[in-house]
Length: 89
Length: 183
Ligand SMILES: [Fe+2]
Image (cartoon, rainbow over all chains, first blue to last red; front, side, top):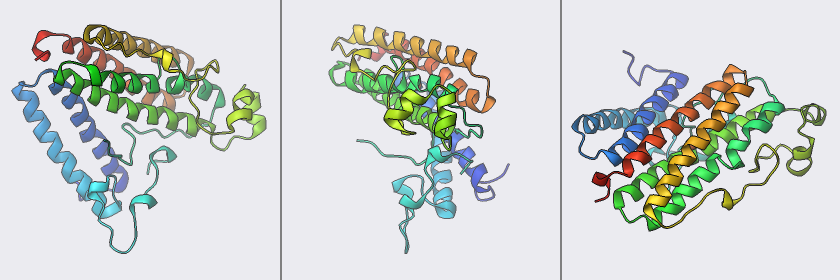
């Protein structure tokens, strides 16, 4: 399987959408099943994938979250495309 | 508090503007069973929810609804972007255009403005959870109706995603009504 560092921007954003969705869905499930061991493992797995993908995206294409923003000589946060613009990043 | 992520929860990439269907889909922004209603309902109800776990669920689902609101706005924006006044008028969009140009404003498909009376925050755990389950079903039916009226696959794809989430949230609210969450 491709690593996050081998993905182009569109592939990486798609990957972030997928692993982030897994995190949102299992979070709500765990809210009502707080002791489900398999669900807890699933959460651990996808939250790690999400963290590393978010970091890789910020390094290569700019931050999607303020926590991964790492400005050097330009404030990239506000220059990122807005998500409703469409046209696949 | 909240943090913003500069991406949509599920991608919206519409290449064929169509103001006729924008007018229909707009109802899931500011209509009676739309995503503003959903997010404001859950995010308002949580303060008086006596069970911490259920208040947490209301927060997490209410937060996801904010992301759905943004997806609907993105769909409407992309469906109306770049259309001339003549094209908008031909699609029946003139009454909206005269007040809002191509801005995004919360109203139902029939033009009724968003109104907080579309949801309830009763301050009673059972009442609020049953309202929430009904709300998810009403939103699901609205998405079913949209899918009967809209044929463009680029529009139907994110609408199907949103419809699916209504079913999952209905399930979660039903579980929240059980004893093991009420601790
Ligand atoms: Fe929703």
